[in-house]
Image 1 (cartoon, rainbow, N blue to C red):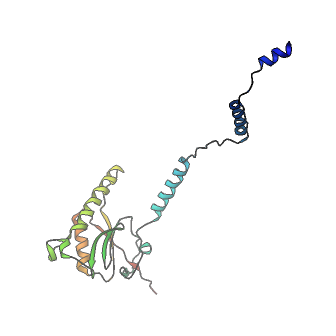
Image 2 (cartoon, one colour; image 1 turned 180 degrees about the vertical axis):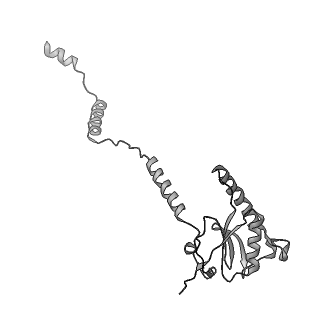
Image 3 (cartoon, rainbow, N blue to C red; image 1 turned 90 degrees about the horizontal axis):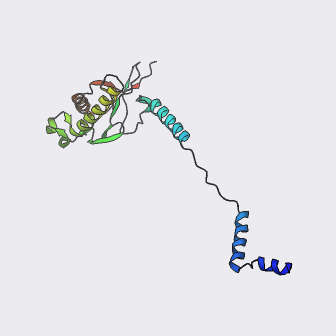
Length: 191
């Protein structure tokens, strides 16, 4: 009778139960992938430090200005290094402010349609707009840093640029609160 009771107490496994058990054993042998979180905070800190280092190491020196056929700096004998001023580059074909294209030039001259007052005008309209925005930004930064706005601008011009164009750029900068001019040149070697 004991064998009959034990046979009745054991339930027969269905085909579905067998498949489930086989699947469970198979899955228990497979190593489960545990997702690991990537902590990006130290990486962001490192990238910020590198960015600050690169920004501080780049300065507006004549040696760091890429020269081409359209931009050759004049030579002079100077002993002062330029400050971290706003860069206005006047090449034979364009005017750029901090690397951003502002206006195109034809043989070093500004198109009269881009000047206030036409051909005899001294203010270059696109440059004036950008310089006004740059002055506002620089003034805000200086106020937040508790410093005084200096209005420093570094004029980097091709040595063949007509003096009229350089004067127009200087005048436009001066009318927009950038009146502390630095002219970048290549230092001549004295023998």
